[in-house]
Length: 75
Image (cartoon, rainbow, N blue to C red; front, top):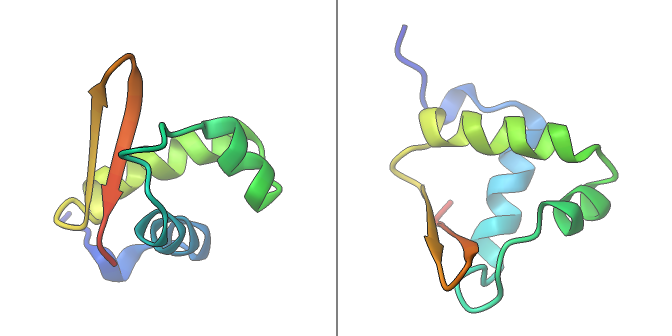
């Protein structure tokens, strides 16, 4: 089954838009801050990020640099 950007859940779409509008290259990613911002559990953020790497793989890049996770998105 091939999934794409059109298959995003409402939360995944909101998270991807939030990441796109933010700078998580210069400012390290914080799952706790994301969970607080969206009023969800950290587990939900982790699950959504994992899903985004499959459904929106051409729109998100997650990498490790300087001891922290960095995320870039274009949505």
